[in-house]
Image 1: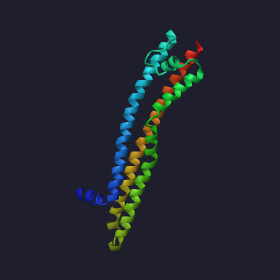
Image 2 (image 1 turned 120 degrees about the vertical axis):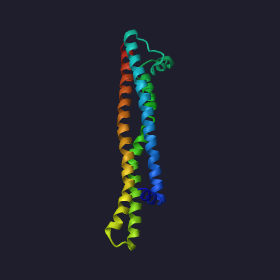
Image 3 (image 1 turned 180 degrees about the vertical axis):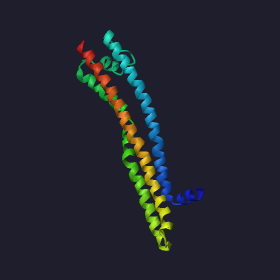
Image 4 (image 1 turned 90 degrees about the horizontal axis):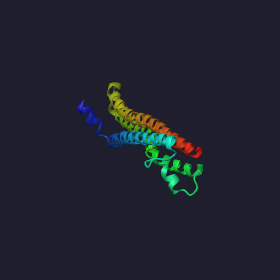
Length: 182
C-alpha cells in the first residue's frame, strides 16, 4: 500500500490537485459549522425578538431590526427592507465559497485524472499487457473521486445554509410586518 501511495504522489500534479482539494474540503467543513451555529443562534434571537414584539410592540435591544427604527426618521416598509437586505448580505457570507467549491471541485479532480491518464498512456510504450497499465489508470481516477468527495458536502452544506438564511429572512419579515401593522 505504501509503495503505491508514494508512486501516486511522485507526480507533482497529483500533489497539487489533492492538496487543493484537501484545502477546499477543510474550509467547506469550517465554513459550514461556523455558519450553521451562528445562523442557528441568530434565528433563535430573532424568534425571541418576534415574540417580544408580538406581546409588547417593542423590539428587544439585541434584535437586528432595532437599529432600523432607531436610526430612521421615517419608519416604513422600505426602511425595514434595507435592514433585511443588510441582514441577508451578512447571513449569506460564505455561501458563495461553498457554491464555488461544489462547482469547481469535480473539474479540479478531472484535471488530475486527465494528467494521470496521459502519464499512463505515455508509459504504455514499454508495457505489453493491460495488467501493467490498469493500476496507472486506477491511480488517475483517485483525483476525480477526491473532487467529488469535496463537491458533495459543499453542495449539501450550501443547501442547508441557504434554508437557514431563508428561515432567518422570513422571521425578519414577520417582525417588519408585525411592527408596521400596529
